[in-house]
Image (cartoon, rainbow, N blue to C red; front, side, top):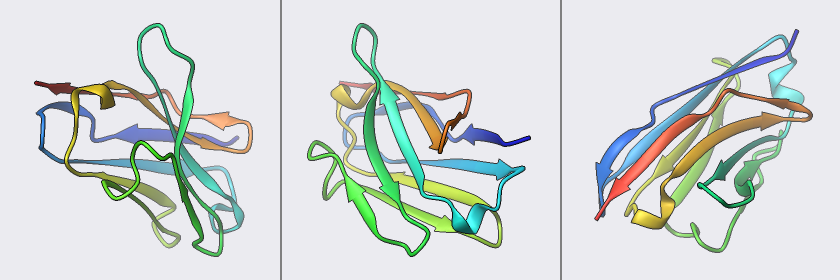
Length: 111
């Protein structure tokens, strides 16, 4: 059974950094495109970044040049390094692979 577990969220001041991790199990991780999504209160869930099995990446315009997605196939883990955080980055961040979602991790950026 596929399972994704996120960690690394928290409270940070504007301009700060956080690194999110998503550990996968029950899937052939190296073959999967992995994605990070976020959902702010009252808003739809949106794609933040994704990384294919070959390492190609795609980012939302709002996070380009600030966030970096990476993967470690040996550890079956995908990361999201978030720098220069802004209050508008506040949301629950979810990891996704195909139709499997993680439980989410809260990121709060104070001004």
